[in-house]
Image (cartoon, rainbow, N blue to C red):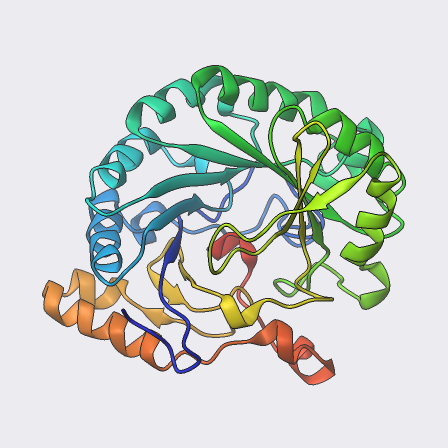
Length: 331
């Protein structure tokens, strides 16, 4: 088992396939920064599907069991089911998932399921059209996302729903959101985090998960669930009807000690933390003809030296340092 110096194994790989998105969520890609003139990556700079498959095989050979496709918005990558099919064919992959805003799932869900995708995590921050439109930056209706969720379920995909909670923005109707979404699958409430460099994060905007739990518990008893596995980021609960609630508390209750995730950007840079400032370029040696043995050696070297624990060290100095944009490496 490959372990980092803090004893954390490499088990999860998140693969970004594009830096583009069809929303402008304020906590990820605010429109005032990622506007019409923003220079997104040219296609030639993105890893090809062959390159992603090759690197994924090497990661799986080092212990990775879970692959998650991210972005940007991954459904914007042309011929995405082809990549899913390639990754589904890698022996040792136990879980193949994707994070998405759901807008293109009505068109793609069936093909993605047929290619081997197992589940999707869909982002939906409010059922109030005005609030959601404000948060997604483009006035898109929550009904568009709900249509994507329903399409995923019809196709046979498992669904989780993520909600980023920002105090004073979308926290007034959390119970209604929980009631409206829990029939679709597990609903996870995420504390507003200081990802990237442009989302205007401050601690006053964070609604602690403990307060979220207290509000939702007023709707009915919530029973704690044991972690399903090491590295699980959500503290899970279940209501009396069997619906699952998750709380992700990176700010108030960091879980760095059990982090098993590596992230591969759309241009082939390996990051060992969501809040990283720097990564390791894998695309250059890949395109220069490096052997699998050499690439594997590089992966082992990176993970063997990994000491990231940003959320446990979060403070004025740490929070002020530049970070890679989440649109480059996914959530």
